[in-house]
Length: 249
Ligand code: PGA
Picture (cartoon, rainbow, N blue to C red):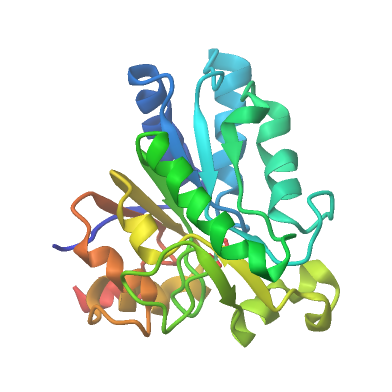
């Protein structure tokens, strides 16, 4: 299966189109299950969903969500935890019910982690599976925190973060030493079970890895390349992130 790429003049227009897809899904299925991502990339999308809630009456009252990942060792109220990222950038501004959103916990004792990860997988299944998964892509091709070497059959688990991932996060934390070394992440198999997946990538710094994910071999070196095996996957790109694709097509 080829990955369909949709190229927009800018990130704003791409984010608006993805927000429209989510709006249509929720109108069709008010209790839709969304897979959510953090990072800089989905911010414009979340801003547009908040606008649709405020101005167009889009209700998230029955929507269920599962986030991809969470850092290990950060309490939920830490400003860089993905829990607080989601509150600040989306949940505080829409009518989602607190019992309906889920993130892995990064605060468990080591011996409680496997059970927690299994419970997270079971909760996704019990919700009926993810209808619509939003992804970003790391500069090393990771999806969620599935760093190079993660297998296509990986499930929610404790992962070790790569140097490039930690250095990309360093500005937000103040220094690389303050960035957690581990996280809990949905696995590649967890992600690939979503019924529909949209990966967003913006900016020139993503161009090379986007081209590898779309045109390169399906390989554990670039876990986003596993998306080539999915039946309903779209990459929404700005023209900068699509630069190397256009050259290779
Ligand atoms: P970004 O991160 O959105 O901050 O670029 C993407 C990712 O690492 O998945």
